[in-house]
Image (cartoon, rainbow, N blue to C red; front, side, top):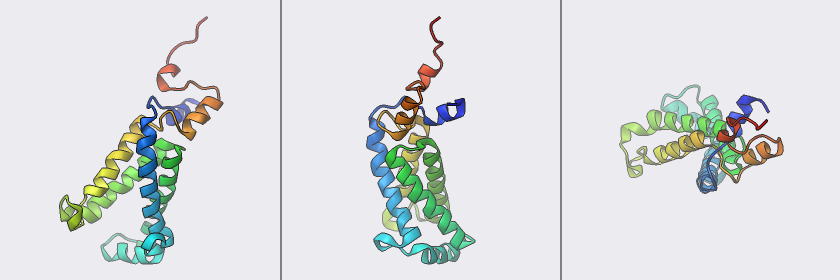
Length: 161
């Protein structure tokens, strides 16, 4: 496996990352499914796109597709621990956009449509982007299967002669 792929898939995090990844991934995937498919009481792409356009996020349909896809597919990837770092970066960016384009002017609290919820998801996904998927993940399985070191520290230890 080349150095970039090893960096993307490696992780020094333990099983605790699983405890963070799975619920955050499920929540993101559920919210993305509302935007993309209208599941769980969502408005689907058309309705979400119209709403996004109405608040100045243009083109609404394309932005709804991007946000919904980032949340849905990124959330699934996080829950599985598959390409965790890229999925976490994309979802963290999506949460920053939500914070500053929708929620920030309403203050912190969710009861006023504030940014506390999106900030919590941002913090969790940013942490996953930094630490990686952890020991219980598809990423770990892929690195183990390829014969690569199990964590990024091991990659820097020279082999014995």
